[in-house]
Length: 327
Image: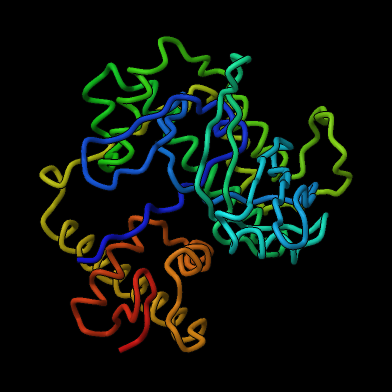
């Protein structure tokens, strides 16, 4: 199987900005990961918000773009793209301040010699203008990931509760590494971040952060109201007890298997339809496919499984590295 790029992890700006510890795995071509305080294992991220500032600090011949994106909670991502990232620089040059955007990019952390502060930025590989509805949909899914990491951090010392979360290998590695790197974490800050972001999405009123952004985020829908109410009533986000398959009737297990198979077929259909729709002749780039399919509720690891399955079935192939085309 061809080497595949790291999936884009959905992360809010506040968690990303606090991710100052680096980790490189003992394997060939390992990227440098940033580990967040609550276990985000970040190399490539998928971020969204409103483009708040953009400036070319270079020249027309040798551009160096810096940009700022404000996420749905009112916090900032900082973007940089220059000569070593011409595609990202070209994409930024076409955007205007005030537009909602989705961006896939690599994370970078820099600590100046004369400072103890670490600056975290994103080098955009793909960035495009979207609707606020898409930004809000992204934000709901980013909050899902944030909630999972909060639960995992709280449950880490309880083997039974930790196991119930059914984390994948990447998520489990991130939690373990965060415990090694960060001796103490103010978990209540991330619980507040989760509550505040959901409240904003639901159209609730909070004390506004200092910001030049004057627009308003649209309501993400009634489902967010329910999530906010649940978080307000249960700030400790209790982990629900799950019934194992061994304890379920055989007919129920069979029904779940049929449902799971149908879900897999549905995801394969979604991916195939997007490849047909977005392919302009040379195949569709993995990151562009990842951004588009995320709006359909398919995350990075799930997309990888679908691509492997479609390849094994002979339905798609890679005309060049990390580009997918219908066979």
